[in-house]
Length: 167
Length: 167
DNA sequence: GCCGGCACTGTTACAGTGTATCAGCCGCCC
DNA sequence: GGGCGGCTGATACACTGTAACAGTGCCGGC
Image (cartoon, rainbow over all chains, first blue to last red):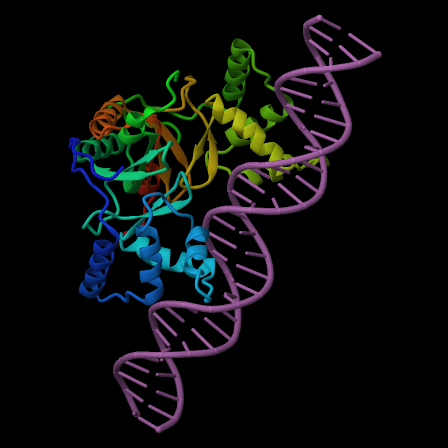
């Protein structure tokens, strides 16, 4: 689910690894004069360490491992911060979160591919879809401010490993 | 939020009124040999009576008006049935449901426009977006089975009524 | 130094969303 | 009649998310 060789009409996007995500976040926060606190780093680290989307309570549970316990509400606040600055993305159809593999800051123009077999998530962008979408919406007299596109199905790796044959 | 004159590149879609939705549902269930029970009709009626998306508990509360009380779990079961057959749609970004204004049965290929000002929802289809999406996803090696596209913003009516000026 | 403001975090409580499970009902077929 | 399957009612519970308040640490003004 990580490194597609294929290049869609938009930019492809493999998941960045755990380290680079944290480094990138740290740099971005310095640039924007934001506080990249311990909790926020831990939450981002937890999310980045998983290819699958994580629920807020999963994150809280994982961070509560060693003695000190982290309440879900704290996780939510950290997630609010991280999503606001485009470091993680919310997957609406799953009520869960994934770390952003891009180097951008914008949180729009993204498209999520969710595999039903392995639960993995890939993100990609497609300017072609964006422009079509913007065009169609504008003709309906609508002024968009944000949008979500989430596709469920089977990723290439799972299909090769052999999905349900008679299906 | 109901009757756009504009025609996007796809098919436009005004909301059908309360009556026709129920009639259509009844016919569809007869055709497919499905049971359009009292509860299911009531739930669909409640959803169809609102331009805004309704939460399951809102529906339960509304149906519980006159003496007899309807539990949320029953509403969920009715909603499962209705969504499964394309009579209502789930709005993932709101955890809520709207009645389908189409005459189709498929629940894919749809696109939802959600107005932040009035809370109204419009649905439309766009073959152009569909084909772009299918193409992009296929090139990523992904086999889609379902997809959601939800756009938030301001609908034409609200913008004309005067949105926030300095914004 | 002290004080006040500010952002962040901890904690508790609670509202909202969704599912599991068991039991009763009703129509249908044998 | 008896069994079977689909629908509903009811209770309990898990998961998701927010409100409200208190404590802490940092930083700037006095």
